[in-house]
Amino acid sequence: MAIFRPFKAYRPKPEFAAEVAAKPYDVLNSNEARREAEGHPLSFLHVGKPEIDLDPSINPYDASVYMKGKKNLTNLISQGMLAEDKEPYFYLYAQTMDGRTQYGFVGCASVEDYWNDIIKKHENTRKDKEEDRSNHVRVTNAHTGPIFLTFRDNEEISRIIDEVKQTAPDNDHVALDGIRHTSWVISNRALINKIQTIFSKINYLYVADGHHRTAAAGIVGRERRAANPLHRGDEEYNFFLAVVFPSSQLYIMDYNRLIKDLNGLSNEDFITKISAYFSIEVSEQRVKSAKKGEVGMYLNGKWHRLNTKPELLANPDPVESLDVAILQKYVNSGILGIDDPRTSKRIDFVGGIRGLAELERRVDSGEMQAAFAMYPTSLDELMSIADAGKIMPPKSTWFEPKLRDGLFIHFLD
Image (tube, rainbow, N blue to C red):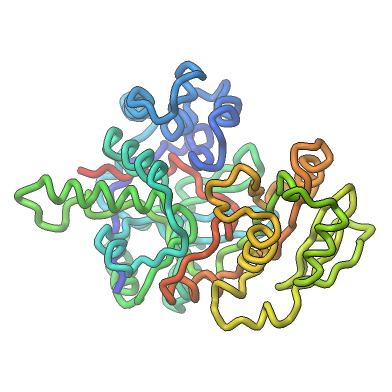
């Protein structure tokens, strides 16, 4: 059963929240983060991606980068921008994008639940990225970006959400990208106990987004445990910052593919080869996939609608029947020779938030030769794969809106 508990968060004072809150560290590269933080000295990007405050030539994994992040976090606290709550609380956090709002609870999940697979994963992680986030946690002594968790819907949780959101929020602001962020402090002790009790009866939590941050929390938590001869199990390092959403609240967007070359094939030969796996028709319009098994392909200035052959979709394996897995197995690997999409320089991934025009732009520029617009993986598929102990292909899910860093910070002691 899942452990989810309240904590004493460091939070921006309401008048500073809009300036402090920032996109997660892994959504922007260093140059994008540097531009976004320009003129915004309170932006939490100075904590999450502190290389933006150093010479652009510096290795983002250099020890000085993490020390800069620690200094920037300390400055936000010493300057009074962030303040610690006096008691451990839960928080309700809402995000509104395009008229749709999702609600989740902010609290701390268990490191041991991560290691014992009470918190289920669906992606492999890379050691270099694990070490990056582990170093960030080690040096700052904090979880500065929440892990995005989900669980199968629970009626009692839904009723509590409906109850809390009727009260006055503690923070309510609209970010520069138009996404509204609202949060409520849950300070009523009886309600806090009730939420903990409900979660203690939930079998599993699932990592929706943030596998590397979760791994880092697990790694550093185990390190702190091994280094503490008086370890009890209730120390803060045994828990990590998370926002937990009922699965029906969440929205997964398409996660699209760009291909740098056709492995020596002409456009015509490539289309002939993929016709073994898809029926193909040219479209006069952009093809935004509307159903499972449908893929949009942009090639040679034209959109094509690909429909996966039924026998491939009928595969009973929950991973092999994913659209992204079928494309990877039969096209990217089988035809194009891109065997490891996690490391290959011949493939790139674009979140659906950037739209189909971004796919066209990068192909038309000559940077890429083909693009594939995918139908989004569903939450049911994600949880079924995690339940089966299997791993999705890389870049299978793109969640929007993204959680903001800086609205809640959890220190390890």
